[in-house]
Image (cartoon, rainbow, N blue to C red):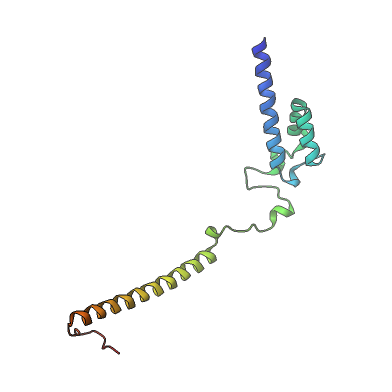
Length: 138
């Protein structure tokens, strides 16, 4: 008999945790009858009855809320355009690629100038005459 009580206690705790998570993650348009804080207090003080009450009367039924995550009934708040993450924004990605190309071109230009300067310094030190195609020293 003690095992049954322990099992029922664990089920009650699990139900209360699920109800709290559901209540705290629900959007304002999905909560019915009472404010969110009242539902949280009811679930905390009366875990079994409060959890069942939340799932029965506290939130919008799934059929009215739509199918899945993205369909159906939407409040005015949810119809506003959502901000796009930078890695999903094509304009941002294009600007980053353009900046990266410019930075790469500038880096390559500086490397080439440095390489030419070093080659010229080595030639001058070794006393080698300039090769064909080399720039004349100014």
